[in-house]
Length: 183
Image 1: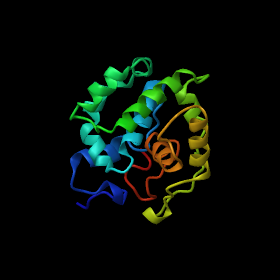
Image 2: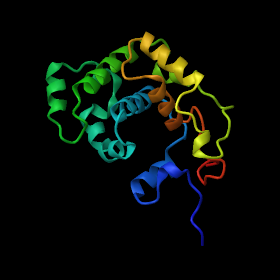
Image 3: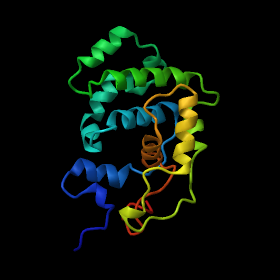
Image 4: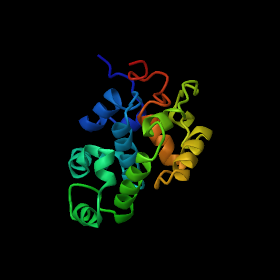
């Protein structure tokens, strides 16, 4: 029996990465806290491997109160210091402070974070045949990044915004023949 065809970025060696590709990536995620978690993790991933974030995701969830927006928005400098001392997460002050600032900004969004992000969905995006067909930035990700920044979010450039859009299903960038495309 032949292996199913997958997006090449998923690799074939790490079961956690394969499960993420097959069961999560590109599937719709809604709800303010759930979208906030993904925004936060994409920001922490900046400059690192996504597999590094996946391996630390449960630690992040514990450290950041399951990414409850109201709880993270109430964090103080003591919480920043606590997080900087947590070896289970990425200990980058700028990214930690961005997550807290982003939670505070999310509290002020009329309609909520999920609604704002999902306004940028692109269900008509072209179906990629190869990884070369998958963009790093799109007009939609530029618009999403611009709107988030305007509302006080940090670490949300167009590339990070596009990675978020891919991860939570605003676009479906599974390759045309990928086993997970139609799931």
